[in-house]
Amino acid sequence: EAGVVQSPRYKIIEKKQPVAFWCNPISGHNTLYWYRQNLGQGPELLIRYENEEAVDDSQLPKDRFSAERLKGVDSTLKIQPAELGDSAVYLCASSPGTSGGSYIQETQYFGPGTRLLVL
Amino acid sequence: TQLLEQSPQFLSIQEGENLTVYCNSSSVFSSLQWYRQEPGEGPVLLVTVVTGGEVKKLKRLTFQFGDARKDSSLHITAAQPGDTGLYLCAGADRGSTLGRLYFGRGTQLTVWP
Image (cartoon, rainbow over all chains, first blue to last red; front, side, top):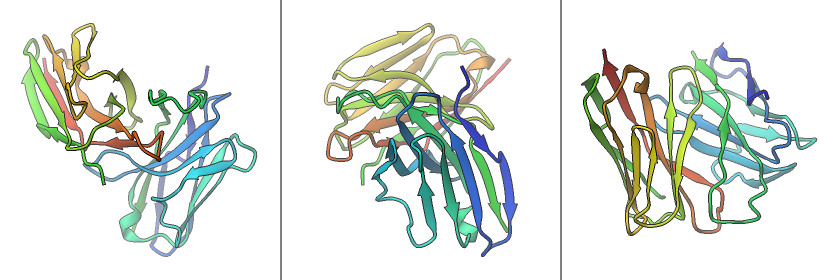
């Protein structure tokens, strides 16, 4: 079974340009996450979807970042305009989303990430 | 903001040595997970611990969750070069943001042949 797929794997852009990242989660997984991982840091959640609904987007910088998951399957994260500080690895993860609110954390399966460099 | 402190930040050892890495917080978590991340890849889950005082073993890796569910440790016996990677701990929020994981900065482990 295929894992989480992300594209592109690498992206180099100039500041003020727009950029978009795409994620296809594991088939059947209802929950999708976007994380940002800065150099030397652990991943930080940007947004979490339950099917089509964004249920946790409090850490998404909404002035320049947007995300969508229109059909509850794949998702796109966009930055417009990009700033130098946006250089990071953007990770997508998915989980089954069947825990029913249990406190036991579901297993999140991560993709390989998109490495963004803003010049 | 919940903060997970991991130590040491870097660890470089010879094959066959034992090691322990730590994950500490002032917050209580409903569960805690350990991940390993290799260069150019996303983190891969190693274990989830849920109960205070819980100990789980995965081959040469032993994970322990603190009694108060605020800290955890990972012990590796007879480390091998294949153990090289970034070890991340992540705590699950018990509150309204159910499902959010808070990651530490990680311990970068290098095991030399």
